[in-house]
Length: 327
Image 1 (cartoon, rainbow, N blue to C red):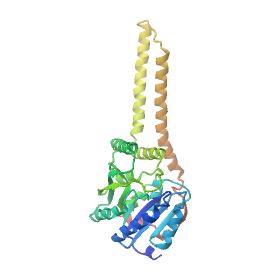
Image 2 (cartoon, rainbow, N blue to C red; image 1 turned 180 degrees about the horizontal axis):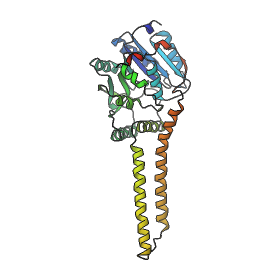
Image 3 (spheres, rainbow, N blue to C red; image 1 turned 180 degrees about the vertical axis):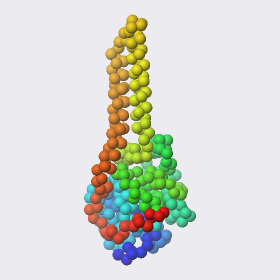
């Protein structure tokens, strides 16, 4: 393809999961927006194991427009891995990450790019309003980011998702962060560089339903916490010392009461309650430690992060990273 041999000014990465109905409108809005920035662009759609005809729609688009590329996974690997695959393949000087459900308006890319031209390496879209989302989702999201901010040393912006523009050098360093449990917004914040925000109102979903179930949201939250904080492990240690100290005091009191006061402490209820409490703390502690061990195990196994079943991206379309060595 002729586009491959040209310098790409901007790449747009769009993870897709069961978005068959949305893809035509998504492409039209992306094309109209990005072509105003530069004619040298690429749209990289990553089909994350969709169960509908999303792949066929992407293949049609790629046949109509040589600047449209698709990556089709062998199965569903998750949103963060889909974005990672797009980052591995893109070669734009500026890279935009946007979801494929049109809740994030493609037209905002123009504003993100304008901020980038001012010298910012990271420009994230901050949600001023979130339409079509339940009170539970909004409140739990706010709680999660506030907790994450308290227990980590990095400043992850509040009320932001993965919708953002990042410089090519940021992409280069993200490729070096090879952990299996991806939390990209945390990784980008950890990298630093000059960052700023653009406010926008997030639209409600037009078609279908979200692929992010409660279990996936909890798993995503655990990736963020365990990937950027060891405070849960410290808490487990403190709980262990605290309970051991309290237990030691109770033992001293029981001995004193039996031999000095001549009064033996009895009580089936108190015994069972204390045993259940200590047992619960132990199980929680084992669970927290297990989460960290599980993530270590995934990285030690060194399995491929994703499997590409089909793609129209050739090897020459991948960014060379050697030129960043001297940055």
